[in-house]
Amino acid sequence: MWRDTVLVAGKDLRIELRSRVVMHQVVPVGVLVLVLFAFALGPDRAPMAKAAPGLFWVAVLFASVLAVQRSFAVEASDGARDGLRLSGLDPAGVFLGKSAAVAVQLVVLEVVLTAGVVVLYGSHIRSYGSIIVAGLAGTAGLAAAGTLYGALAAGLRVRETLLPFLFLPVAAPVLLAGTRAWQVALGTAGNVGNVGSAGDPWVRLLLVFAAVYLALGVVIFGPLQEAS
Image 1 (cartoon, rainbow, N blue to C red):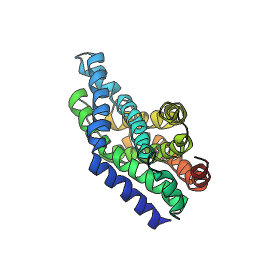
Image 2: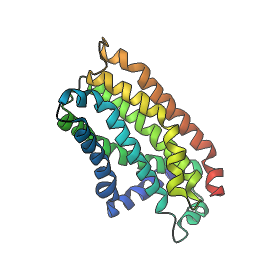
Image 3: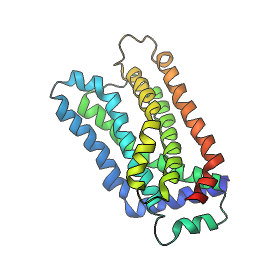
């Protein structure tokens, strides 16, 4: 399973490196969301800094839809999806590999968006550790859930419009917990005392969400792949 995970992740990442869709489409969409909200909130930095955690995760959420759609769109032509099914690769390895490739792309996006939050919104990071842990946990959850629902919608003609309806409501816990964890780490959650202890419950929620969807994907990705 782990060998197949590396093979599939390497395949997807090589495709993205050659096409540069992440740099030309996904990252600009995320940055554009931050810029548009900056214009909407006005020149006052106070409300922008307060809203920065939520806007960050909204941008990541919308960009993750594009990354997942791209992950399955490259296999929609020339029988690539059938070839992947007939290759003998472990379905769990395929799921983990595609999730890992999406997660790497989201991490690149999040690094850019974090810099954008600091520059555009005047936010100050109080706990880099909390930011990193919350970001990685949320990314793993979004990548796993997105890959699972991407496989569910992959065989349908309306997959481009169906995926957001399936994925976005399910990803609401990541949006909520990620926003709260970032509010604590950026010091915009009021009087929270110790940064680490105040953000820990939300980080744990992100970790549980990621664990549930990773386990679910390992178990049911094979049947979903056959059905699509």
